[in-house]
Length: 154
Image (tube, rainbow, N blue to C red; front, side):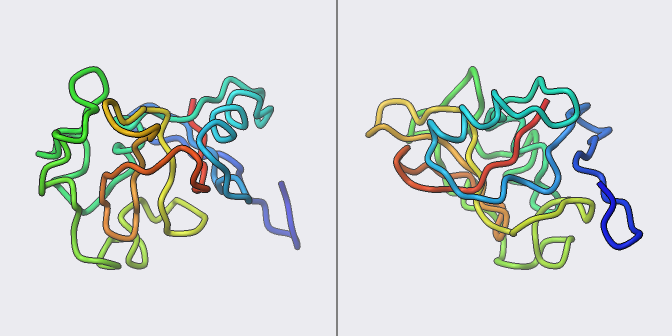
């Protein structure tokens, strides 16, 4: 898409994970079911999008080793998605001290530095799902009826 003589890509490929991300993210906040539907029907750049798992979303974290990929936070798709796995190491790092203007993601990322839904359900609790809050790189869960930010992956 080109605006005012400058071209802006609507996707970003993370070479370390191999994932392509919607960039910028969805303009509107939405609940978890809405987020899953939005991503599965997104036609951007040929389609094939999905709401990322918590593991995929954690690949975006930069500058906070506890919650980034391979960090000590135990919330991991296929291993542990219950609240008991949300240890102190999942609480992230100092607010707004990330490498991208205070945000804990790549400087290539566009959009609000906020929390973004994953497709991973928070098992054994109220209907909830896991998210990453990029102001602190915290991994946490919230009720699926809450409105959160959405960034699709493929």
